[in-house]
Image (cartoon, rainbow, N blue to C red; front, side, top):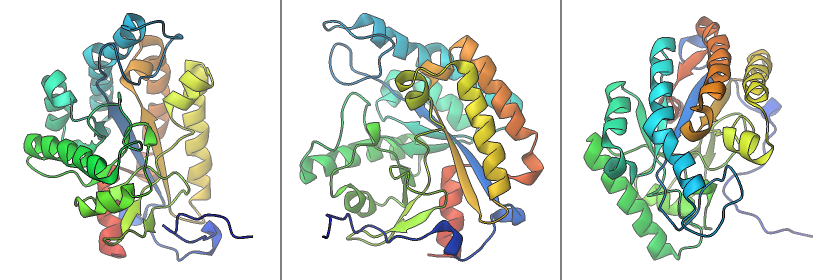
Length: 291
């Protein structure tokens, strides 16, 4: 029996691949994926602190808005104190809603990654023409604001149609964070050439952990530490990528921020042993080493 297949990449065991190093001879690349998102009021999608009532759902809207007004600023200060680079996964609506927040992360030299227009919508339900327009709209805003087009894309809600990789490559993107099937970057096939899939976590990710599984702040921080320690050991055998996915309305809450800081301090204590980087830098290295 032959099952339907995406045909984007072939099966490959991680233990049977060519070996290589990250810059400086490092074996583990670690990056932060910070989601800066804006949501429509009274309609559309959004994570929920508590089951939402009839719209307008003020409780959940205001809870998410806390991330942009307070949580992200506290996190910026933490990243400054720890001297950590960040890949900012930005809804294009953020430039109209919170331009000073986007400017603050631009001033740090952080990478800006395309993350749709808003997390109130999914691109997977659109026809190819409408989906291409969504990608073009978001890309135009980011390019105008940052004076350079984004290299990478993360779909809102990791939502893809069957042609999303083709549309991203056609729009000029070099990498996607949508596919979480590996601990190494993998070149995917598209109708317009190769697109790099950089590992983006669905386990070390505060939404599945805190919203879905109801993990505590301490549990999520311990998860980050345990995942890092294990991958650092595993990287002796293969070069690996560890991403950490964060949302300010979750881990920017004071009691969660304290535990997150503990976990990131643990990682930074191993700074000399790892490549602490950005997703776009991983793409640049892979594109140069194996275009």
